Structure formats: C-alpha cells, structure tokens
Length: 412
Image 1 (cartoon, helix red, strand yellow):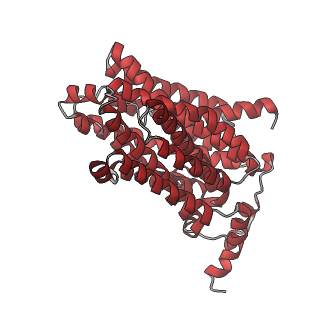
Image 2: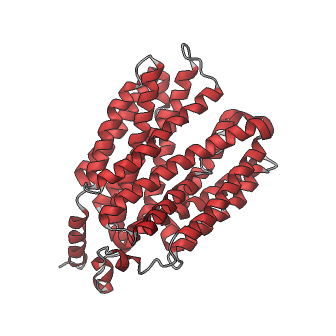
Image 3: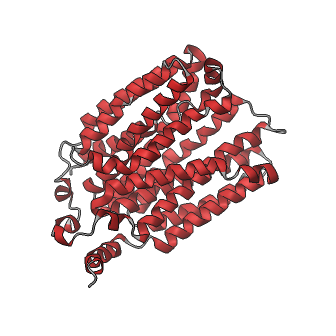
C-alpha cells in the first residue's frame, strides 16, 4: 500500500481505539452528581462503569461469530455510530435502573469495535506491521478513555452531567462516520494485497483444526490469563491510590483524584513508540519488557513524595497499555481463523480480571494499606510476565504446531 494510504489507515485504527473506549469510563468522574440525581450512594453510582464492563465480558466471546458474515468496516463503523443511542439514553435516564440498563447497552456494542478492529489489523498488515499498528490502536483506546472522563467532567461543571454525556455521545457518532470513511471497503482479500502469509487460511478445510481446538491451545490460554492479570493490576492501582491520596498528608479532593488519569497521556505517546520497537521484536519480548517496567513502577508509588507517586502511576499505566498492545498483536498473529473470537474471549478475561482487581485487594488494603495493594499489583504483573515468558512461543512455531494438530485430533 502507498505511504499516504498507509498513514490514513493507521489513523483510522487509532480512531477505532478512541471510539472503543470513549464511553466506557465516561461516568466514572461524576459519581457524586449521579448519586444526587438518582438518590443513591456514590459507591452505588459507580455501578454504571461495572454495568458496561459486565456487558463487554458477556458479549465479547460471541463477536466473531455474530460479525463474521459482514464486512469489517461496516461492523466497526456501525457499532461506533449506534453507540450514540444508548449513550443518549444514559444521559437522559429517568431512574437509576434505567441508567444501569443504558450503560449495559453501551457495553454490548463496544466489543464489536474493539475485537473486530484488532482482527482487521491482523488481516490488513504483515506480521511485523501488525504489532506496530496494534500499539497505535491501544494508544487510541488510552486517549479515548481519558477523553471520555475529561470531557464529561469539564462539561458537567458548566452544562450539567446530562448535557456533558450528550456531547460524548455525539462524539461517538462522529467517530463512527469518520471510521467508515477511512477504513478500506474490502476486507476478505486484504491479506493477498498486503503480502500476509495466508497458508493457514488456504489449507484444505478438512484438515483445519476446530475453532475450539484453536482457542484452547496453551499460548492463547496464557494470553487470556495474561490480560486478566494486566487489567487486575491497573484497576487495583487506580481504585485504591485515590483512597490513599485522599488521606493525610495529601488530602486530595474529588477533582484532584480525577486529574490523576492524566498520567494515561504518557501511554498515548509511549505505546506507539513501543509498537515501532516491536516491529523487529516479538510480542513476547514486548510483553516481558513492559512487565519488567511495571514492577519497579509499582514500587515507586510506595514513596511518600507526590512526584515519585505520580511517576510510578504514569510508568505503571504505560506498561499496562504496552502489555495490552503486545497481547493484541500476539493473539492476532497466533489465533488464525479464530482471530475475532479469540480477541473476544481475551476481552472477557481482561474485564473479568479488572473486576477482580477492585475486589481482591480490598482485604489487603484494610490490613496493610497501600503496601498491600502494591504487593497485589506486583504479584499480578509477575504472573503476567511468567505467562508470556513460558507460553508465548513464536507465531511461526504456533502455526507449525497447528499443522500437526489434525493428526493428533484424529488419533494418528
């Protein structure tokens, strides 16, 4: 593909990442406003985020099957555009139950943007390029997640939270239209034009392993566990660091705690750079380097000064997004014909891990404070690093193993 088209395509996938996460955490910074409107506690108002992530975890494994008959561009753009409807429903919900239902509906559409985008990247780009573009996509998710929070909070202080969410909803619609205009029309034959090895897909289907056999291979199972550990560490960090900084001697208020998410912006810059580095490295190496960064970053937050804490948060969140980019690239290169479904299962495990990250460290927080949470984060990152080191073999070896699987499955 020519240089100009290549840049446009990469920009489109960055935009796909933004669209996938724009609405996910949009209500996280306005819990007090939601609590006052619906007459619930601020803690219960936080279920608006949980409802969305629960929907993602439930729907994601089925995305590949549901979207299979349709063009990739159509699925991604339509899901991003249609998210405006439940997002507007969220903004104008008349009761808390209606609000939660609307947030759940938002989550049902998100996997169609995320999973199909990652699968599309694997189809349009060579193995070396896919790691770089996956990192660019993850940088887009980082910016989208930050923008959803920032725009909502900034506009809510002036216009009220309902109109603030209206603006985020309309941004989703605009992103969907832009994605449709930027992504290519042809999906099926894209591999042939970009020179991606298509021997796996071209094999006689009589000798192709089943989708279940593909998904239950140890490298992919390890990738699913890797994702769960990675988001568990991230959610644990940002759930409990706010509680720590609200205490003396820091005394952070709600606005200051919300501003902590600005540390994500470092990942918007670093993650694409890591993707370029990964062009000549394997996803396994990228994941290991990121896990090694995450461990001292977590330790840095044990300091008492505010600056080292913020540096630790910035480096730790950047490591998580680089790990996510590495996992996306690894699954895209390894899953073969089950790519979309594999990404969907990965998303389910990823968000399940995130849910556990807000629950499991609670007892450690009560008994040992922030040090207990840091210990949880380090253990989760150590497990993630071990899974990548132990099971993420080179995709070429994975395909060689895949070729031998029919004989094993047939009992030969």
